[in-house]
Length: 468
Image 1 (cartoon, one colour):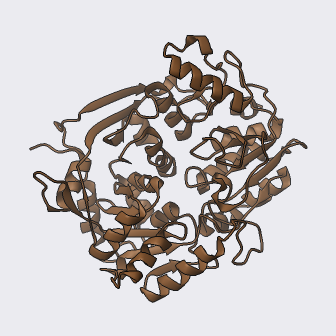
Image 2: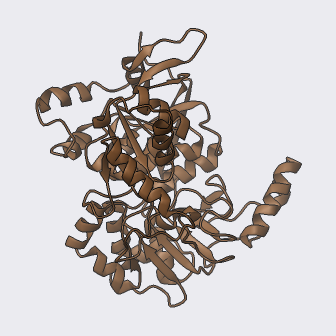
Image 3: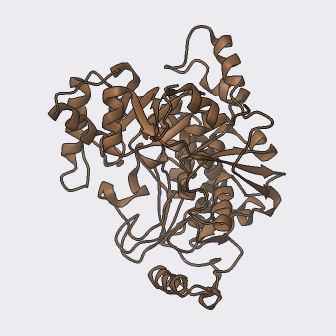
């Protein structure tokens, strides 16, 4: 029977095939962070349960730790330090590998799972974080779970789940200047809604994906959850194999045998997908959100839909509320809208290629005097490599704060946020009410759009600076 890539991995990990109940699936790796992973470990301890395979469990401190230079065990989150100390103590007690804040391997969980070779093609990796789907760029199933499911996985190395339906999203053709994978996902979600992937595992493909640098693929898979998908995945190729070679946790023996197996991880030619979306990549332009969901986005030279164009009365009411919160009007262009702050970071867009692309915009330019600009690299490895290339100096010379690794201002749970009614252009993945601080108005965009807008002091297309 022909199978999709997802189905091949799922089938190979099925411990028990569910008949009138979900499948029981083996979990290869489990990743924890201090904000939710500590709950799972604490619950295990209270129930006198052990971790089934400590060597396959890893942890980091990324969600609530300060990212200010010279940080210690500090967090601006009230009561947050207990999360850090609890994770540290329980990781030691359960003999779990912890990438602590002074560890050179430290960083955001989804970045370091890949950087360290913890996630491999054909694996199923879980983490109590919805953006675990990032790891699909390696040809792994990244499965975001809740704390209780994480606890079950820790104790048994298994999880039960209904197999999701299968969707193929194909991007074909050459991308326009100034367009990258963030714009591709905003385009997809705007066209097919934030719930368009609900109930599906999505395989991304097409010649646009084939030509894309691996780090851009991480962004695609990362935002599959913003499309409400179970996960996102891309068939592994030579770019993946080259990336994983000699990583600390990558297989050190029988490399050719491993890559031969990984190369077989692709959907069969006659595999059946429940849904197929085809997108012409030349139709995609630099994009930006105007509302409170990635679905509410437009090409940067477009205009916000008008309220009276909404046919559903409930949608009209929601849109009016959204526009009021964002301080905008239907039919308005976002071009030249003044901003107060710019943020480059998060598990979506804080990899080395993201910082390189932003640095090309910032070089020999200055951030507008009225804009607070912050960059938080996604990991210590990204930060070190960026500094070796002089990228940090370009950011600092331009007027950006250069921070330590962590989730930082991606969300307000860490205690640090922007001010009410401040307008922020951000490379993060979510823009709901209060995501970056109470009353903050967040516009999602690619790192180069964020960088260009920071220089201009207002929302502009990155094409405007790249053409100079």
